[in-house]
Image 1 (tube, rainbow, N blue to C red):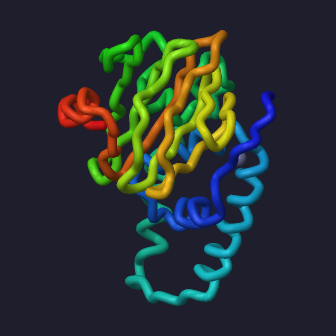
Image 2 (cartoon, protein in one colour; image 1 turned 180 degrees about the horizontal axis):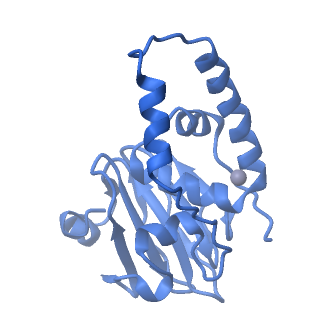
Length: 213
Ligand SMILES: [Zn+2]
């Protein structure tokens, strides 16, 4: 296991536990959580808080609810889905979205060798896979909302730090950055945004609506 240094914030973990995040953000977090024991343990604490609150709730159901529920459970033999061990590059939550591993990704070129694949999620936020060739920079940009970037392969650096496999960068409106992929392995990331990015140069700005970035 690689050493993960950049984790999910408490605020995001709490929102994830409460089920309040857009699907695209939940996918990024679920993927990080599948790689990170530390964040899974912290999530357990937030889930316990939610469980305690639910324990204090009382709501009356119709009288035959329990019998009806048990009858439906009896009628359907449970289909056990065993968690598959991680075989390829993508952890299980991501594989489920793509329907396979790296070979199943439908990449679209963004220029300069950078490629993306937009994943099918709710439209309140966008999730994409990004493929950045080793040594290549992503055009510098700011953020109108929140951008989550999870490294799956390779590494990138920006003014804030270096992000390697499993690391999650959380960029808010205050951050302007130019991520550069490290030499060596090409960098593959899972990224989610809830608002369009703010590019500083003209060409990326013109292409933005086409690429939904
Ligand atoms: Zn973590």
